[in-house]
Amino acid sequence: MTTDPLLLMGEVDDATRRLLRTAASFDNADLAAASLLPGWARGHVLAHLARNADGFVNLLTAARTGEPLPMYASPEARTADIEAGAGRPPAEHLDDLRRTADRFTEAVAAMPVEAWAATVQTRRGPWPAALLVWGRLREMEVHHLDLAADYRPADWSEAFAHRLLREVAAHHGDRPDPPSMVLRFDGSRHELVIGERAGAPVIAGPAADLAAWLIGRDGGGSLAITPDGPLPTPPEWI
Image (cartoon, rainbow, N blue to C red; front, side, top):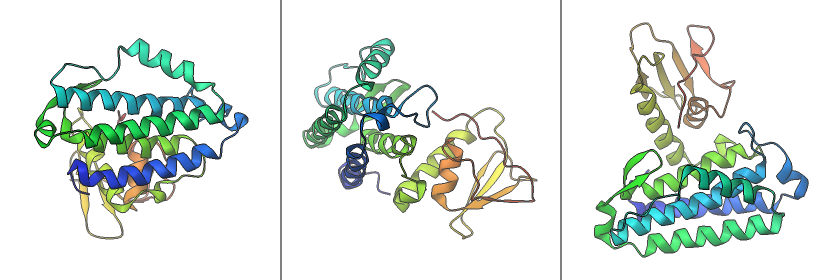
């Protein structure tokens, strides 16, 4: 997958269409049903995705103008906005998702070339502005799984699955004392190593399934481990 934010917008547009299609299928009971995230109904996930788009618009604006605009006013305001929006009727959720997705697209289009070299302050620290489009794509694709609405890792594009897998493997590898494992994906000899290779189990499967397991969105039932035994417990992801 390209790292060029403008070229990535095609993937963002596709992911947005898929998300809107799923959201349009929900009635009030569907929105009140549990998501895959503890304590959150589907309505919470959709409200979060809309407010997340607003947050990324804030960061793009900060990169473009040089103003220190935060992603969210505060952690408390972020939580309150999600709670306030979670119980809305389906039409309001859908309108909010469409409107905020359009605002994100417009904010990307307004970025001059030089602004992509800026550094912005996310909830978890400084980030290159050039990664903001990837960040939004990752947010939509992962949380689409969390809606528990028949969207699966296999529905991700191959490019997205590979990039997410490599990113998460690097993240886990940087943690103190990660469980050692060798990830072998797509039935090939391509491997990623977390921890120490010597004596580490080899875990094999499609890149999307490996990535989903590493981020805690899949139990790993489709994965093969050599030698036989239980799958390791991946470190907590973001």
